Length: 356
Image 1 (cartoon, rainbow, N blue to C red):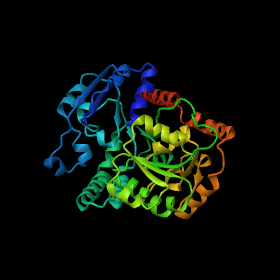
Image 2: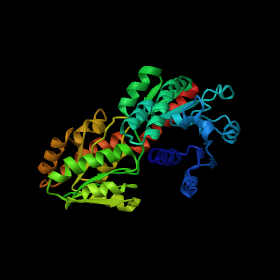
Image 3: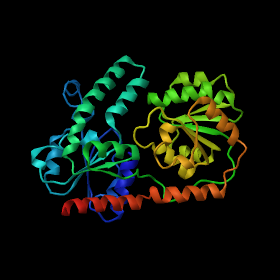
Image 4: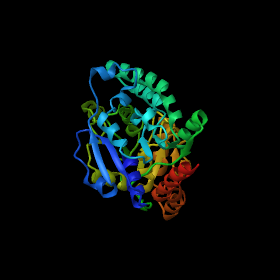
């Protein structure tokens, strides 16, 4: 959602007309989107047991809508499908001749395989396994796209090797400049959506094998942490859980931390929380899964095992974050991750494809 919102905002600022079609998730309609879009249309997802029985992946089949298809036939504008899961109509014969571009966020079947590996509920585990299998077969539909916009270097390498039509367009984000502060903070922070099993597994590992072995206060912050995470952290006086911080509080936690620690269990996509930590936080410890092959390795302290993470924390806990470190981040981030530059790249791809 972050990549999508700030991509819309950046394209709108270039003067591109955007008719946005999106599916509802029970959230209030966004008046801010209307500032950057000519129109915003909302549709209900086609959920239910029959959707699960379809040969299509559930995430794709549930996003079919006769109203949506009727609306996109009202003009002949280029169509940007935001993710493989939105491509139900990508190969429809009535869209033949329309320019079709797909933003590919992940290698989806690998992503769902990783979700299966981290899942503990047997029914969800089975769902992720079936979805991964269907997504791997379904991915061939991407051959019908004129261009694929990969979000990470690894994704670009994969999609271009398979389909020969991928371009690298790095993720969009809220930052205009590096906002990191010099000096030192008082704690180590791990943040993520703790209702996602992969993030919960990491949080539990940090509690038992890293945070419990360091002297600094350590905070785990995120959405819907289960009660047993607090129970596991309770024997250690230096570990605290911040449940469901709002956007302002989370930004403050990232900004004021001395160290943001961000291991991941998979390398799929581009982890936006790494960008948040680098644009606004101080020292950043990351593992190879999250930072490898991103161009951001030089801005992180790489640690792949709990012992290495503990050692990096102990090394950094008495080191101030300096102006020189901020300048180094600016050199990398403000060029590679410029929303304006990446929006202009999408603009040029659309018109280059239209005239070729």
